[in-house]
Structures are given as structure tokens and as C-alpha cells.
Image (tube, rainbow, N blue to C red; front, side, top):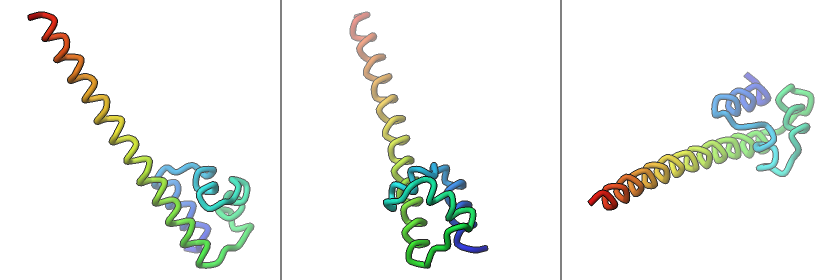
Length: 88
């Protein structure tokens, strides 16, 4: 598997949009699309930058989702406790 396929597969597996990954390495979505199709060759250094960027975005997205779930649970708990206090 070449760099282009590895990048595309990793990005898709982690559900990272092309434009997000491209911006993370100061490039455009069009550039990344061409890289993933093998039109623009990249060296090992850029490959590593892209893989790290994709992993960083995926980790950030997971952290955001976890924070949303925790915040939602906290609001629900506070709301339920507030309703119980009003009934007393």
C-alpha cells in the first residue's frame, strides 16, 4: 500500500473530513484529494505530518463528543434534581 492509499484509508477509518485534514497541514482540500488519488506525490515527512494530523483531529473529535455526552448527562441530572426540589 502506498502513501496515498494509507492516508485515504486512515482518514476514512477515523471519519476525518478531507478539508479538516488539509487545513491541519496548511493545504487545501483539493490538494489532499489529489494526494489521495496519487496525482501529487508526497515524501515521507509529509506523509507523517498528514497521519499525525488525521490522528490529532480524530482524538480532538472524540474528546469533543465525550465532553458533549458528559455535559448532557450533567444537565439532565441537574434538571432532574431541580424538579425533585420543586416537588418537595
